[in-house]
Image 1: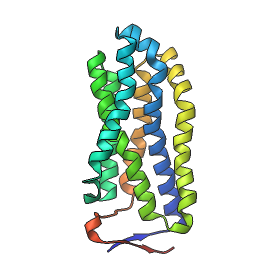
Image 2: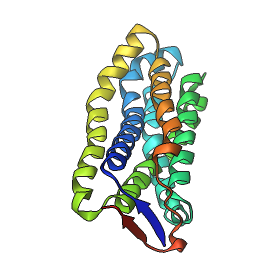
Image 3: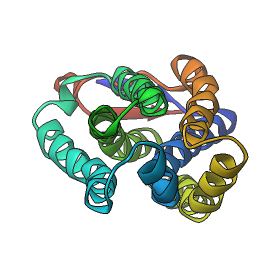
Length: 204
């Protein structure tokens, strides 16, 4: 049986870290859409190809989500989240380094694979680590990251692209995500694979 020790400080740090991770990967999804005119001009892509760039993230996320159902519970939640978040950051950097349509399409697909499963692991961590009586409030705070990213993604993408170039939004998200990745091993609790049995809360 896995044991998770809960304190008010632990819960607060965990919830805001998960909200930050949620913000970053939703921002990555939102930021591409306002870059269409620049991408079509600089990379010489068509509107149909740009449509593929937008949709491939969602398609890849859906496929990865279905595939993860059969394996994600075999891993410690901390390891799963840090591994997925690392892959997401590397894929986002690859988006900024892309040189043509095909390289950007591949990078967006990989970002979708990692980012699409992140939300599921975040929700699983909340369910595992936050007691029922406080889980609703914690979930609301984490989903605030989703809402903020949905609102800020488009204007931020336009601002960075206009003042620098289309690559800058991806580099910005990567830089913003890196401190959270470094904090994750320290702040995320170890929640063993499901074969270890149910979670027991201590200190609630």
